[in-house]
Image 1 (cartoon, rainbow, N blue to C red):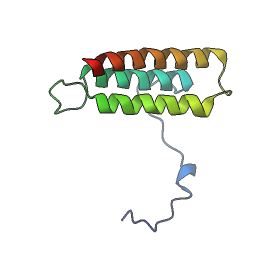
Image 2 (cartoon, one colour):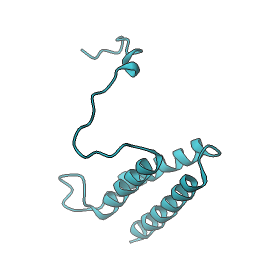
Image 3 (cartoon, rainbow, N blue to C red):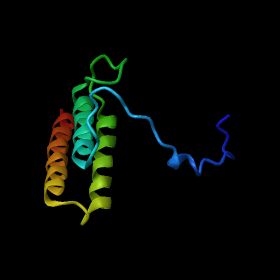
Length: 103
């Protein structure tokens, strides 16, 4: 069950059923805003059950690193609005992270 030798090469071609409900379609902007909200939640301590409301700087940093990775890998492939959004989100979250980390 789930062994390392299993071939999952066709798994990417599996068609997923609709999400249902009022889930908006995902696009680059929605994805970046979702990651941003996730980082902000980690900075405020409003996620991760069992953390007693303490901020999770490591998880916030990990999300920032994902956003930086996206910025690097998408450079030159975004439209102006997407690029501005990503830069603005990164700048804001980095500033908030530094403020929390310095206490």
